[in-house]
Image (cartoon, rainbow, N blue to C red; front, top):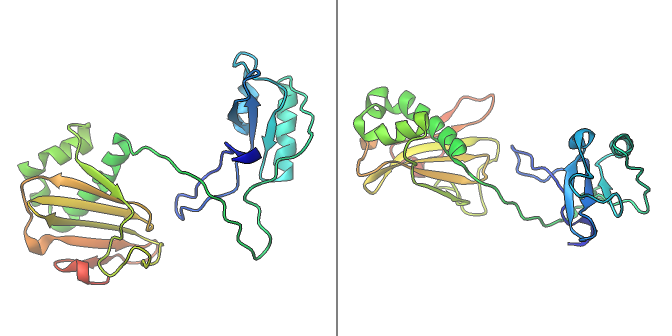
Length: 239
């Protein structure tokens, strides 16, 4: 909403926190009143006339003054002499010691490449700690074929629910680790992976089959620390 509508920002992949806006230019499309965002690194090769962009009513935003001046310089090289009327205020600037909440809506797509990568991590965990003899059984064929060759997709669910049994929706372990488990749920083998207390991804790795109960496993991996493990009963065990 407002003058900062459409501002392009970035999300820190480890903390999930919103970071400062990227250097960018908002071009109006002709006289439509609609804008398209172009990142600063895309400007040198931009054929703005061919795209139908107007060199009027533009908006320029950068996180630091030197980057802002750099954007203006690049605009000149592509034939745009931008005259600043008023500078967009960085919506994420905050007074020292104060929080300034700023609501955003985040959308993303978990495509097959990402799902296969997550499943590869789960398969590696299974191969090392459950055993290669287990994960090479024919019951695992569909999961292996999806990971290796992009075969038939594996059913997947994404949620924000907690990973460990001791956690609640609002009370979580430190967000400095990633958590993985493989367990029996009903008649299926379910793999679950969660990075830094963000989204929880659940995969139906094997249908209509269970691994031996003593081989159910959960692990917590923290950079620069030895991994922590839970086996049978891990839902009630802190690691």
